[in-house]
Amino acid sequence: MQNQSQYLPPLTGIRALAAFLVLGLHAEQNVPVGLELIFPFFARGYVGVDFFFILSGFIITHVYLASLASPSRSAVQIFLWHRFIRLYPVHVTILVILAAMVSLANVAGIVLNKPQEWQWMDLVWHFTMLQAWGVTEVPGWNAPSWSISAEWFAYLLFPLLAPALMRIRTPMIAMWIAGAALAGMVLIFATTHWSLNTWVGAPALTRVFGEFLCGAALFRATMMSRGLPHISGDILGASAFLAFLIAASVGLSDFLLIGLLALTILGAAQSRGFLAWTLGSRPLVWLGEVSYSIYMVHFPVLIAIRRFWERLGIAEWHSAGRIFAFLATIALVVACAAILFHVIERPARTRLRDRMGTLAPA
Image (tube, rainbow, N blue to C red; front, side, top):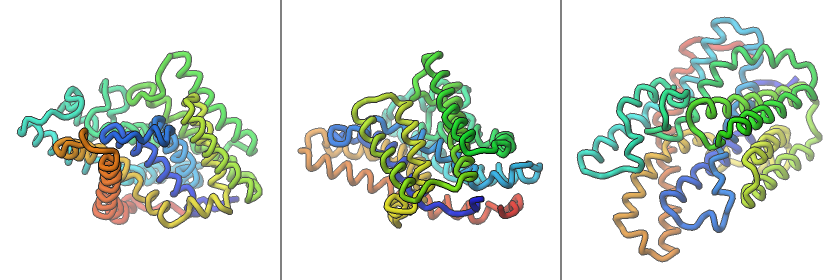
């Protein structure tokens, strides 16, 4: 059996890919430079969130399945505390920063993007991480944080899911469940005519649950099997991601893209060759480690930097100047994320993680 506490650097590198899909899409929307003409797959960058959801199901199961296979009250409390500490310090820090930004903008008479979304009464839902559960009509405030609200929903269900996962006895059944989780999600979205790119309510929760379950079942499959030959994991992961880039560029279905991302994760988790080396390289692993901070901080940074470039007259600049502004914006987001990671995210995890106790090693 695979050691569930084993660190998987390639999957940390994948977090960087997911974060930059989302960041590239949103940066282009705020500091347009024609990125999607060169790399058209960035127009589908919102599926980076789906990448995160599947990866989350895989990694959470990898780390916590043994502890929650027969969950005790103490084990459930420790698990939920671990996940809360992982999400909340950065989340609440960004909310406070955004509240200050909106207050200053109101005093200065600056109109921010989509002013109808900056509703003070909605902050209570954001501080309780319930904003994606259908209690508001729009994501509001730090819009990308809808996904951590949805993740929190999946985490609350995981102690119930873990014992069921342990009842799966063969890798083939686990693979069927992974496929069925995505197929069921597709069927629900098709029959209800929901858009995948929906951030609140039943569509958001259906989206996270189907993809989280897919990732969890994929891990269960790899856990019970002897794994693919080393080269096969590399070929599967690399081929699936290349197919994703091509399919996203030519406008194929969002749901096909999600399936290809699931195969990318499955291959990367079993890779031992060139794919593991690439995704496990020091730069990608570092970016993967700060990816949550990148994801959470990029929205307020883009709001602020967009006004800065507009005041400098970016609309009149030549393409070289706009490219410089775009790259400087990306660099600023990463720099702010690094500060957030080292000042808030990592210290909070280090100091607070074991306050509820520790789980027995797998």
